[in-house]
Structures are given as C-alpha cells and as structure tokens.
Amino acid sequence: MMVVAADPSQRGRVYAALEDASARGLAIARTWAFSMTVAVGWPCSLPLDPTTSESFKYGLDFVVSEARKYGMRMVLSLENNYDAMGGKKQYVEWARARGQPVSSEGDFFTNELVKSFYKDHVKSSITGVMYRDDPTIMAWELMNEVQCPSDPSGKTVQSWITEMASYVKSIDGNHLLEAGLEGFYGPSSPKMQQYPLHFQVGTAFVANNQIPDIDFTTVHSYPDQWLPNSNEGDQLSFLNSWMETHIEDVQNTLRKPVLFAEFGKSSNGYSPDQRDRIFNTVYSTIYSSASKGGAAVGGMFWQL
Image (cartoon, rainbow, N blue to C red; front, side, top):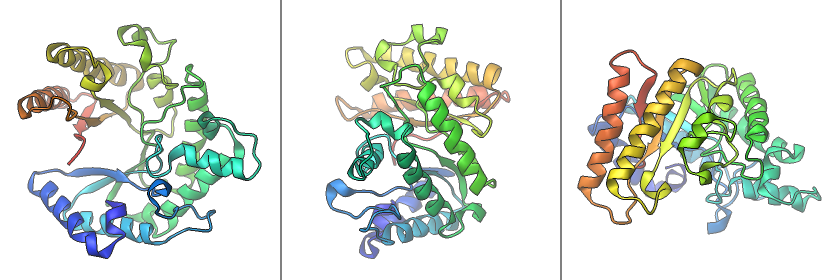
C-alpha cells in the first residue's frame, strides 16, 4: 500500500482496498513500512543512501491517514526478512560496500554497522511525521517473519530482538510492539518434536516472546506450503494443532496475547471451499479462545 500510495495516480487503489476492508468489517490491517525496492528500480528509503526518496514516506502517511478515516488500526512492519523491497540482504550488501567483513545475511543481526542502519531506518520511520503520537497505529513489527538459519538455536535472534525492541520503545512508548515471528520453536523446545525439522529457522517462539519489550505474540500458518506432500485433512489437522499449541503456550507460559497475523491458502490447487475451511478453522479457534477470556485476540488473513 505504501508503494502504491507513493504514486498519486495510483491512490485510487488504496481507497478501494480500505473501502473494501471496511465494508467487510475489518478493523485492523497490517502493511509494510519499508520500501528499499532496489530490485525493481525504486530508490531506497534509508536516510543513509544517496538515492533516498521521500515519496514512500509520503505514501505511508497517506495510507495511515486514509485508514484513520475508516476507524481502522494499523500494524506497521519495519523491515523484511526476504529480498522483496530490499530486506536484510540489502543491509548486509550496503555494509559490505563500506568495507565491513560481512559474508552472509546472518550478519544482519550481529554487525554493528548493519544494526545502526536498521536503527536509522526505525528512527526515521517513527519520528518522521510523529507516528509515535498517532493512535491509528496499533503496533510496530520489528521484521516480517524474522529468520536466522545460520544460528538455529535462536540465540542470535534473541539478542537482536532484545536490542531492537528496547530501541523502538526508547523512541516510542505509546504503541504496542511485536517481533514479527511465525511461531517456530527452537531446537531446545519439546514442542519442536511435533513439527518438521525444516521449521528450525533460528527462532524460538517462547524465549523470543519472553523479552519484556515485546507486548504481544504473533503466529503465521501456511500448512499447504509447509507440508507440501500432505492432503487437505492432514493440513487442517496440523492447523488445529499449531493454533492450540501456541494458544496454550501464550496463555500458560508467556501470559501475553496472540495475534494470528498471517494465514491463508496458496493458489496452487486452490478452491474457495478449501480456503473457507481454513478460514473457518482459524476463526473458530480464535473465537473459542477469546470468548472464554483466552489469549487469542484476532486474526488477519493474507491477504486482502
């Protein structure tokens, strides 16, 4: 939405999306607050880069302003784990260009110069139009789907979340903060045995969310992509187990809310009936928890 809104001639698409969301009763939306779209020729949004363009920031201002008109709340993600729009890979490449001894994307979480790039971006994003005082924003997200496969223990990510969560809170104590985790358990967790080994992506759901500056937890779920050789029944069974396990951990151990921030059905073999069964499973589970005062507080399908 931010990128589309940066082009005034395309802003009708933003109007349409928010109008559609409001008409369907959606009270919360999650969108990107990063725009280093180097791969497709757009300029980078970081203050440190000479090709900086203010247009994307104005685009985000427009999105937040329009959401306010509909009474919606926004969750704004500050960076991407993946290459789309730059992501952590681009940060590492900038540091390498400045002579830093970085060799992999894992250095994003440990190199001091890279971390300073991220902090500059965060500070610029939050203070540019005084977003820290805007009630339209419900929460900040440190990164979309944080992953550090080079350290499957989760300790590298633990240290990074601790540092960056503290930094965000030092700038903005008015808004909630979440890490952007998918919900994968670390290898030391007994829950890890319930799920495939390829789920070890360097995060530890419980430990990462125990960090005091993290206000609520997030879980993503794509059973058809994560279990590609399984049938629909197995995928729905996994989805039920995945949700109940995380609700239990959040309620009994973390004692924080859980937002099911992404879930959906891929277009590979897609049918509306399959999508509806997944949506029904997710929302029924959320409602069952919330109606009893449990930890589940809502869900956001990917994507409108």
